[in-house]
Length: 452
Image (cartoon, rainbow, N blue to C red; front, side, top):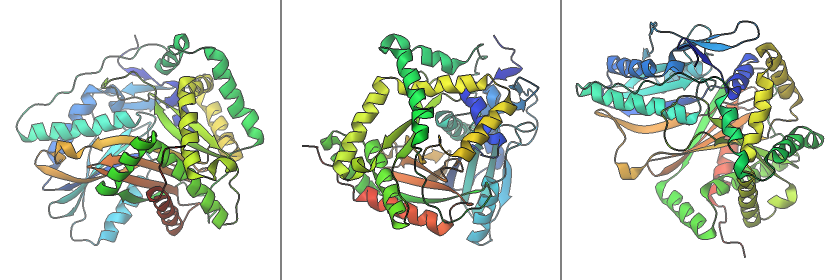
């Protein structure tokens, strides 16, 4: 068992850290838009309660030669919450502050792997922003953090003491590699399939790399911007009913609409979209809530060619079949072997590997599309933080340069909400909003019928 003072990085943690080292910031954000008076001290107490029980969230990064680890801080030093009062100022002041907040990097060697700000926008109107480095947590771990702070705030407000269960130490070895090895008994010719997928991804596919989405800028900034759209309750209800009847899922429609949007977008701008490859995160950890803040994810990459995208209904069912085959053959686990191989090298060498991947652009998918699922259901009533109403919620995904765009989808209070993150060096705000509008048009009009 590792010392309680040190926490190792798994293979995905270390690869995400290497990306951060070449200024590809893997930092997602969650915004809670609140209505009511928020007590900043109670928020601080709720945060401290959570990070005291989760050592990763109160650790700093140490990078001696040939080894990288997290060192746990027991003193819980430093203020865990920034408070900013923008009430009385125009909305543009809020937008400028958020832009600065999102694009200010975390100092992992000095600070916690997260930062939080409570912004007062007007009387009884606040925004609480959770920013967590992807090196420390996947989306489910981030959701655990948010929900725990919400619950703890409510209990503190009622005079109760909320103490999350303290997480045990971390075992030697790479837990994610262990998850991958556990798939062998249930998968025929397991290692042959793992090698075949990696050979196809890094050797065969290098001769026909995925197409890039047309962009109108060629700058060098690593800043990101974002814009939003949603499918209202009625429209989302119709979409779910149609997918059930057709024997497909909402995820299939989201992905099919994304392929067709990229192809139409590129065609409009005089650029071909031959081989498109969409990256989608996949949770590969143990089933059931484990209360662990860590990365337990891999990724799948679905490829389509122009002839497969001609007819929308055929594309939908083609994707359904390809997705089923990927999971049947345990393909989401193949990348873990590649990540583990890379993680055996020093961090400086891993950064050079990442820089090659980013510069060559051969192995990076066309776009990232992630559906984080139902965040809050309308059947549960209003989403509250104590006596404060959570009026809305926004999730901003990280973006890497060769892709330039990332899409995250989630369901909040019966609405399907979509956030598009974009690299400001590649896309103007107008172009990003135009791409998102085109995606929404494709999604809202997508024909979902049973294939004959």
